[in-house]
Length: 284
Image 1: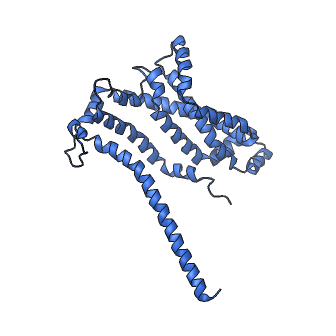
Image 2: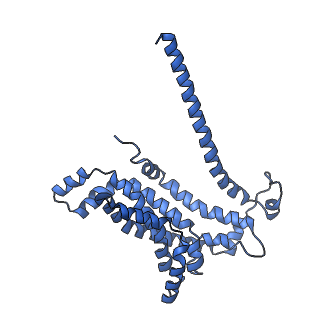
Image 3: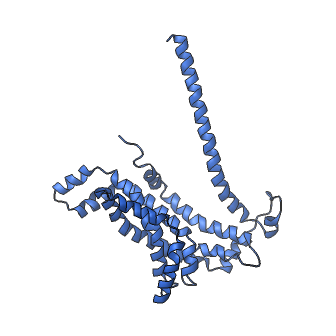
């Protein structure tokens, strides 16, 4: 190949790479923009009055108001629901970790593929399939509107998710490290606590925040099994809906208040979250 032909080939190849990269970022901006716009629209409309919200076409320039947020805090026990969501979500994540981490480790080390598939199937089953039996059982036991009932039901959300995600993290740990520890006198449980868990901290952080988000946002279980004492934050949004009217301003404001705590928690552990998402992405 001549020098002129080589230069032409590399120039064309460089143009192709630039085009493909531009195309990638174009679609990336579109996808991220569509998700970001939904969040922006929720926050944007939470500062509108009812008249501005009902205007068509939508009004982009208006006088912002905090009346919707005042209604959220005055018409609902928002802080009580927040405490309930924290208690139920953190407890569901804690017990999910307590049972899910050893289960994921066992599946990863002993290759229980069918058990892993059954756990994934449990996660894929709609929650309403469990709801009716749970309601009957908890009503017979007098456990409706209790933390025990809500935490137990939310384990169906957190436990399969934690187990399934952590299987991959444990599989990325070289078994030679644990074998060396066992040669030095460490038991299987000792290797799990001293070798496996410390090496998967980013994965644990990622799985924990994802599980908490799923538990935090879950609505159906709280709607049926909870009551005045244990209602969670998603029920706050439901309080602004009835058969006579739909308070869109209150819905937007309540949804904004519910979203920001989870967003804040995700930002607090951002580094661990990103490390957990990329761990194992590069193989040597």
